[in-house]
Image (cartoon, rainbow over all chains, first blue to last red; front, side, top):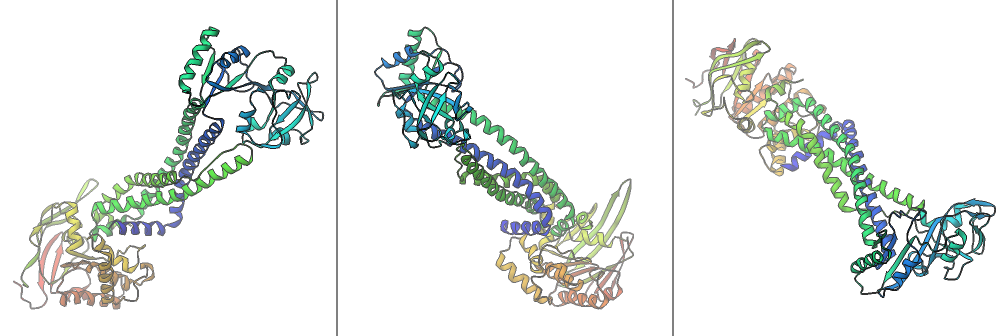
Amino acid sequence: MINDYFLLAFKSIRHRRLRSWLTILGIVIGVAAIVALISLSLGLQSTIEEQFEAFGADRLLIAARGFQGPGTQSEGITDDDVSILERMPEFKTISYGSARPGEIEFKNEVKFPSVFGGRNGKELLEDTTNIAEGRYIDRGDDNDALIGSRVAEGLFENEIIVRNKIKIGGDDGKEFRVVGILEPVGNQQDDNTIYITLDAYREVFGETNQVDFISAQVKPGVDIIALQEKVKREFERQRGDKNIDVVTPKQILEQIGTILGVVQAVLVGIAAISLIVGGIGITNSMYTTVLERTKEIGIMKSIGARNFDILLIFLIESGLMGLVGGFFGVLLGTGISLAIGEFSTQAGFKLLVDVNPGLMLFGLFFAFIVGMISGSLPARQASKLKPVDALRHE
Amino acid sequence: MINEKIIELKEVWKIYKMDEVDFPALQGANLDVYKGEFLAIVGPSGSGKSTMLNSVGALDVPSKGEILLDNKNIAHMHESDLAQIRGKKIGFVFQSFHLIPSLSTLENVMLPMIFQGISREERIKKATELLKAVGLGDKLNNLPSQLSGGQMQRVAIARALSNDPEVILADEPTGNLDSKTGIEILNLLKNLNKKNGKTLIIVTHDEKISREADRIAYLEDGKVVNVKKKKLIFLP
C-alpha cells in the first residue's frame, strides 16, 4: 500500500512539473550547502591531522607562553633552557630554532618571507618535507640556505634556482647560497619560508641566545605524558616561573579540533538556515497543492480513502520532494567540496576532501525528514477536509 | 429477497449553517430503498436531492435522524468507518465524472482498491476487466484529458464497481453528456441493475431517465412527498 502511495505522490509531483522543481531546488541548495560545508571542514580536519602525523607523535613541543607562531615575539626561552632538556636522559634529539619575517634581496628585488633558523633540525625537516632539488642544510652550513617552493618560484619576479645567491637582513645583511629547494608542502606559510642554521640566523638578526621553540624527540618507550609533567616541573624549578608551555602534538591537535568543531557548527548552522528556507518552500508549495487538489481529495474520500490515507499521501509527496532535493543536493554539495578541495590544493593550500558515503546518506535522509515535516501541516489540513465540501470545490 | 430493505431514511434533517442564516436542505425526509431496485430521485432544484444522495452515500452526515444501511445506522458514525462504507458498499457516479487527472484510466479504476489494500496484481486484473466491460479495453493507459465525456463517465462507472458495492449512487450521471451518449450511459447503469443486481439510485431531473426507473421518489422542500411505482413489481 505504501508503494502505491509513493507512486501516487510521484505522479502528482510530475503532474505539476515546474512548480515541483522550483520547490525541490530550495532543498537542493540547502542540502548542497550543508554537505559541502561539512565535507570541507572534515577535509580540513583530516589535512591538519595528516600534517601533524607527519610531524611525529613522539615529540614534546616547547614554546614561551603566549607564543602564537613564527614571527611573533616570544620572551623567555634561551639556550639555557635547551641545556636543561639536554641534561635529561629521556630525549633523543632536541631540535630548536627561531623564526621571523626577514628582508630578502634577490636581483635587486626585496621581499619579506619567513626566515627560520634551526639547530639539530635536519632530520625533522627531512621527515616533514621532500627536497625538489639540491640538498638539505646541516650544522655548520652557515652560508647556505634551503628555500620553500614559493620562495623559489612566485615570490620574486625571477625564479630562484640552486646556486643562486640571496641576501638576508637588508643592506647590512649577509649573502647566502641557495643549496636546496623544497617541494610544496601545501601550506602557504611553510612554502614561503627560508631555512638557515640558527648560528647564521643569530648573526643576521643580531640575536644572542633566544630560542622561539623547541621540538624535542623522545626516546622509544618513554611515557610522553609523564615526561611532559617532569619537564614542566624542571623548568619551573630551574627558572622560577611558569612562562613555558610544554605540549604534545596530540594536545595541539585536540585544541585545533575543538576550534574546528565550533567553526563547523557555525557553518552548518548557516547552511541549516537555507535548508529551513527550502522547507518553508515545500510547506508553501504543499498548501497550494492542497488547495488546488481539494477536489481530488474529495474524490479520493468519496471512493473510500480514510483521513489517514490522505495524510499519508500528502506526507509522502512532500517527503519525496525533500528526497529528490536531497539527492541532487548531496551530489551538488559533494561536487562543490571536491572542486574546492582540488582548487585549493592547486592554489597551494592542501585540502584533502573525500567522498563521504555516510554524510551523503545523512543528507538524503535529512532532506526526506525536512520534506515530511514541512508537509505535515498542509497534509493535516488536506486530511481534515469534509468529503462533500471538498467535492464541491472548484 | 426483492422486498428486503437495503436503505432506510428516518426523519432525516440536514441543516446547513450559512453565515447567519440556517438553510434546511432536508427537513425530515423518509424513504425506503429495496435491494436490487432502480430508484430515481426527482424534484426541483434546491429540493435536497443531492444532499439526500450524499447522506445515503456517507459523504455527508445528517444533522438529525437515522440512515440505516443494511440495518446499521450510518448517520453518526466515525469518519474512518464512513470511509470504509464509501469504499466497500457504495459506488459513486458523479455528473462531472470526478476522475483524477494525473492518473491513467486504469489507475483511476484501481484507486478505490488501493484504499482497501487489495494486491497490485488483483487490482490490475479487476480494473482491466471492468474497463473492458464498459467498452474501454483499448484506453487503459490514456489520461482522462484524452477521453470524451462519455468515455470519462464509463471510467467513472468502472471505478464505482471496482470494490463490488451493493449500491450505485449516481448524481445526474448524464447531465454533462449529449443525449445519445446519455442513453448509452443510462443503459450501462441499467444493465448493472438488471443483470448484476446492483441497487441503483439516480438523482435526475431528466424524465428520460426517471421513466426507466422501478420507482420514482419526488422531493420537495427537503421531504419525500410522493413515491410512485413505475411498473408492477413485487413491492409492498
